[in-house]
Length: 388
Image 1 (tube, one colour):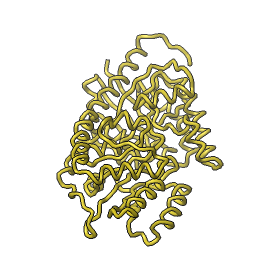
Image 2 (tube, one colour):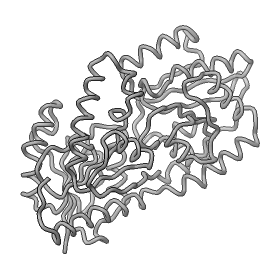
Image 3 (cartoon, one colour):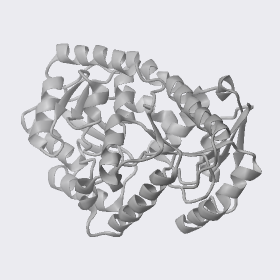
Image 4 (cartoon, one colour):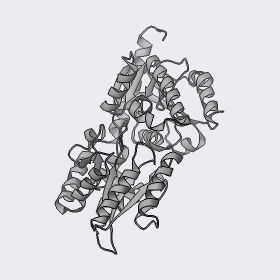
């Protein structure tokens, strides 16, 4: 049978969710799995980021560009009807929230914050904490109603299941990939500096948020500078107000003149290889991730990595990083010092990182995802309709 896949991208507004979908559609060819068409509903900006393919149909529907409540209303009361109108055999919801009545539906868990009580309590009291509680309710209900569920890592799966309990949905762990274009920048990266004219540059590419702990990294770099190391820190990523306030207070205390802490804001995904190309060391100081895409990009770009010793980061990087406790600046400084002061360590991490990154491709991610969606669609045609 020829399968038509529907994808609800209305809740993907940027960041890793849009990157995942963009790379999935760019790298994969669903026609090898007997897929006739892929239909994507989303906002104008999201649809513009997606590649043009002969089998891809992009639909911008009323409500998909509106406020959250309008998008939720459209998804609840219009999406299922739209999927039937387009004769979809299966619906994929990478945003993880679905309250319609279409089947079969496959959701994806990409946000662990609502399911990690230690992490979401960092936001109490705030409206964002209430939003996380609401998202936990919606996604928990979704996961108990869908036919299939995709997790990007074993850690993501185990964290969600520990919170929501056993699920009837068929489950797959499908890792993200890393684009090979990042490897092209490795030969252009500067040699390790350390002189007044050429400082050693530490890169932290991540959203400025409570669980990313950028302020601890600033404190760690300050400690290295006090030891006499000429190190500068580049922070790249969009910022949430509360976290940015805390980060700014730390910078004001330690580098009021902005001589060695540089915040560059958000950089478009297409320009990131140049960002990695200027770095001598990359840092990942997160305590809550469903995957860790920027970690893999650092490895692919040949940037030695100092990394949070938490899952799933340790599972992804393996022996390709020096690990630290992300909530202890002194330990972050120790890891950075270990890398910055040893050429042999830098060479080892670069070599190991190249090999590790090659294990994660978007082609494999796309093939595994489309195969799973087609299996669910074909099973639906051979099994009786069971209400959920």
